[in-house]
Length: 192
Image 1: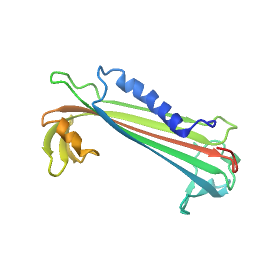
Image 2: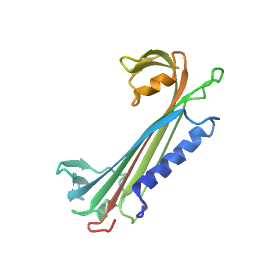
Image 3: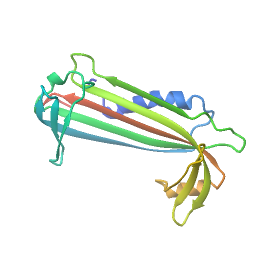
């Protein structure tokens, strides 16, 4: 991964996943919420023989973990290097028309990692669509009860409770969840 902005990289991953799921749908989602979180940590310690790495976060907190075999080019990482993380998540909600059938449930994922010889980097994304029917709405409690195609029910509190005014009991929804994580290591002192 080059100096491309992490937000752009993550967005491109999400679009590539979403293209497959949304292509089969005639209408765009009724609404969508999304968030992107970016963070940088510093390599505080690294043991190449055991693959144990300690990262120090911006608030001074440290975490130690074993870098799995999927982390390519670990030998290039040294104390002081910067590890940049980006996490994207979204949920899209589409209300189906009265006679519109549920689309098939869908799941897609993609992953990529650095080429041999590059600094360690990787990206992983997953998207899943599920079909539900609203069986109850409690505007006072700001919740809705959703029943899945498998018969299971769950009561949820929407991120934006005002959305409850846009739906009613009996509405059928397609919920599409997207998550993407990107990680890259940059040498200490590298210009941003």
